[in-house]
Amino acid sequence: MEIRFFLPHLAYLEIDSMIFFPTLLISLLFHVKRHYKALLLSIIITAPIFLIWDFLATGIRSWSFNPKWVLGIYVIDLPIEEVLFFVVTPFATLLIYDFVQSKMKDHTLSSFSQRNMGIFALVLLILGFFASDHSYTFIDLIYASLSIFLVELFDKDLFTSRNYWVFLLLTYIPFLIFDYFLTSLPVVIYGHNSILNIRVFTIPIEDFIYSFSMMNIYTLFYRRGMRIWI
Image (cartoon, rainbow, N blue to C red):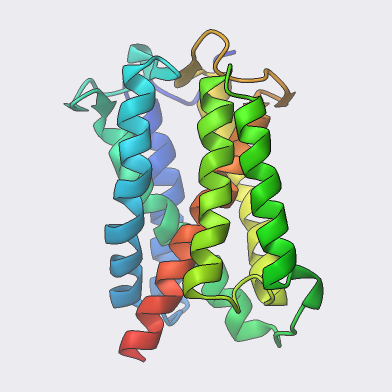
């Protein structure tokens, strides 16, 4: 399916721009307090974690990028737009976190205790090995599990924060829009048997888990950075 307002070779850059520039305008026009040092720390630590996966995944053909919709400038096997994605996404989504934190009184959710989240992480880990025939699904579940263990190791209050789960749910609104663009054009092409092929519209179920892992780790190190500089 081709969406008419995307231009050949510019589509992925347009999507990155649609994520970044509205957020920048909101930050400037409404004088939203952003914690830029903490944001930079989060990006510096988290982006390489997912870029390593991205390089490996393209190497084994878990997914690839449609040359019709990218500039053709590559960092090894990744389009430059894919690298930028790991900068513009936290820049935009963590604005939502700042907004939720500033506007909502937080509450502790005991159901997301360290014990319960640890059990959930173990279940994801086990499911990952059952899905080892599907390369994206397998690594996706491993990363999701490890993201939970990382949070529990370094910031055990994150998952018991009601505001975090409100933020996480809100991130799926732009996720549905932009990932629909990426998967319907498609910019991203999934390899044979790399996914379960269970989709919401054109979006593989694995992408929802991927986003969960990313938000966990970006937010973890964002909060760590805020504790350092605030």
